[in-house]
Length: 71
Image (cartoon, rainbow, N blue to C red; front, side, top):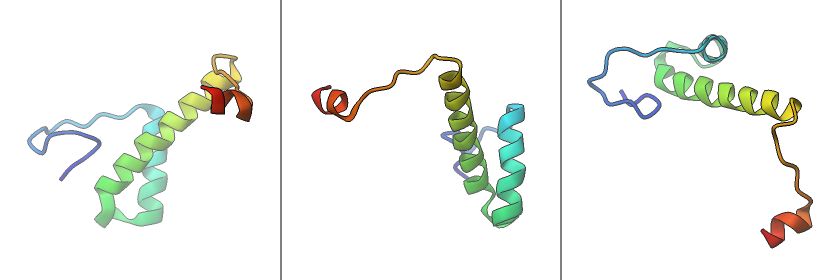
């Protein structure tokens, strides 16, 4: 089973608290049969949470559309 870039022979999978919360939500929505998708989705959602938290603290950069196009 391919899980978030891990090799199939690796046995230990660890989660942050935020990833675990999202994993439980994903399993509830999708069921245990799609556990690898649930794990990947949970990790992605946790990354979005971290990015949102950093942005709220002023660590992000905002650009206008014109700045993006000139980038």
